[in-house]
Structures are given as structure tokens and as C-alpha cells.
Image (tube, rainbow, N blue to C red; front, side, top):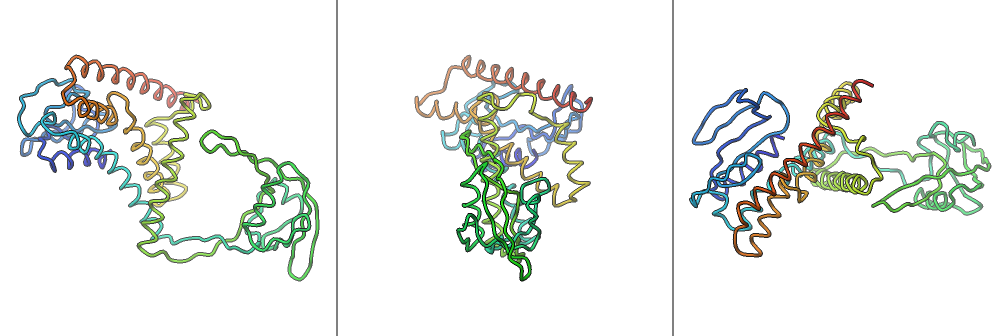
Length: 342
């Protein structure tokens, strides 16, 4: 959350808006550390969840309605400047994810799938294992059709779900043949069901170093990949394909982070941080009252109608948002506690 709030802070400063508060965590009951420096109150809240930046002249979760019309206040700025301030946190989250993914790619290198039809891994319990395929085997044909590369072989298998197929493969200098029934693999891109066949094999990979350009390119692709997954998850949640009970909060994140760090080390933990950062970006930009997207929506409406919305409308919008967020927070915390108990 630090980078998210830093984005708002820097964006506000860049267009001359006064930042009144910059907090990490919630400063409940005035407990925690705080210090005023150059007109901004910096602090660390006792409750370590989220963060908060308060800019002058904005109606946010603080419900502060004070507005003097000074040039350094949020409501004195034009529509683009307002949108820039409220979306900067999301932009910072995405940039952070790209940077971390790029760093991991540069440090760990790139594993490229070998185009040859050589089996790199056989999944336990899948048809390939029952057939007797082993690592290092080279698949030659499927149903009598010669397969020149891994992509062709994959297309042949995936096009025949729940179907008996005939394979021939090479092991050392020996040619082997056999038949096996594919299993069904279901995919749901954007909630559209796609049924494919699979036998449970993976290709071999060739490892090489990554250039800086490749690293940032891969970082951008990985960020987009997780952004798409998060978007699909939210759509599934709204449509009812995913239960609210599956949602997790800070306790679940802490648990996963601990397990990730212990099993995969610092690099796995950095990867998890990137995924969380992408999640925060998408959730915060949703046009929901109380979130950054809600403020962007108000700024757009006011820009279109060329006047400020009535104060009562803005207050009602924020109050509705706080109620929604509070109910969501309680639901998530209940889910987390139930998981811990179980």
C-alpha cells in the first residue's frame, strides 16, 4: 500500500495540490506515530492495514467538507488533474508489478519451451503415465498423423477430448506404439467454457539469460496476465460462479505470504507481492464510492456537466461507499477467521 499512497502523494504534489495527511495503516483512536513536516502530517497507524492520503479540498472517507476555493485544493483543479491524482495510486501499483516481474525475469532468466516433441515431464495419474510415456520420449505421430513440433502435437491432442488416440513415440532407438483415452480439460476464458483433450505431458525447456528489454517486456506481459485473471475472478464473483466465501483478506494474505516465503524464498515472495499489487490496482479503479474509481467517476461527471455536484450528493455517494466497503471488510474478515479456525 505504501507505493499506492505514494502515487497519490506525488501526483497531488505534481499539480500543486496540498497534501494534508500521509498515513500507512489506520490511525484508529489517534493511536500510532505521527509527525508534521512542511504542512503534511505523516504517520503510521496502529492498525496495519492499508494506507491513506488526504489531499486538501476533497470529500473522501474522512467526510471533510471544508473547501475555501484556494488554488492548492483538489476541487480547484481541472478534470484531467483530478483524474491524474485519483488514478496515480493504481498506476503506481501497476508500475511496481511490472518492475518486480521484470527484476525476477532478469535475475532468473527465461525458460523457453523446446519446439521438439520431446516429453519433459509426465504428470502423475494422467493417461500418459498409464500409457508408459517417460521423460525424454519423443512423440512421432498421433492417429497416424506425423507431428513435426510440440504445437502441432498439442493441437492434435486438444482437438480430441475424451477420445481414444493412437500414439507412436521414440525411446532411444526403439519405436513404441500405444493407445490411450484423453481426459477432458475445461477452460473458462471470460466465463466461456472451452473443452480440450489432454494426456498429462509437458515439454522440455531451454534456459537462457534475459536482456533488460526482454525483462521489462515480460514484466508487462505478466502484469497484463494477472490483471486479466483478476478481472475474470471479479466477473465470476459478480455472476455468482465464485462464492463470497472464497474471498480472502489480510489474514489470508499474511498466511500465504508466510508459506510462500518459507517454501519459495524471497523471489516467490516478490512474485506474490506483484500479484497483490495488480489486484489492488484493479479493485481500486472500480467505480465504487470510497475507492479511487469512485472519485474518478465523480470527476468525469463534473467535467461533463461543467459544474460541481451538490455537496449532499457527494456525501451520500461517499457514505454509501463506506457502507459497502465496511460490509465487504466484515465478510472478508469472517472468511479469514473461519479459515484459521478450520
